[in-house]
Length: 240
Image 1: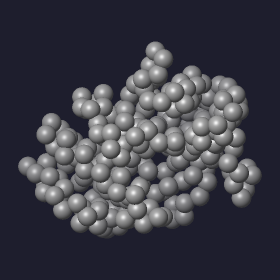
Image 2: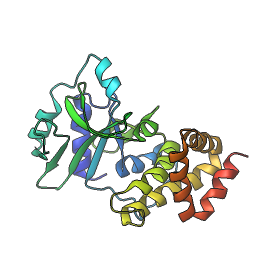
Image 3: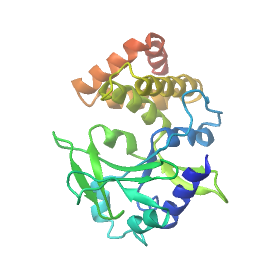
């Protein structure tokens, strides 16, 4: 893990971000799955990115009756991060560090037809609401980021991460054939193929859970699998 990412996670952890339900997602979370799986993840297409994405359930944030101390806004200011202005100045959900280019984004699941901006009181920030995110961050697991004496964070379960990638790759604004979509599918493929060896039922249950959530979910997964024909059989074999 690079120093900029490690330092940021260390400072976010120190004020209580992960203790209060914040979950690290995206490629940085993917890299931290090595310890959970006991495997060395591929370097091609899986390098740490300049984006650090933190997700939390809005409802959890509301009922915790606790909050980070000091605020994340103060933490980011101390680390020389500036808010990325939104159309509504009261709805800032991203911060960027000019020196490194590191971008921090806060996200939360959307349970409504429209995706918008929600408040996360426990973290003291606003977050962009996204569909399908509830599936990804349900039942997260602990992981240790290798920085200083180690930073304890939360990440998604690897099987859910993999299936979620199959869904969101079809929703990318830059298209399902973009470089980012290709990376999504490669991460999903690597996780599913390797977990099929040691944890096939975890993969199968996550796959069936996603498919049970409706025709749109099944359609998006199916379209991704059409781009990786060999993966369909691997998934079916996981179910016995």
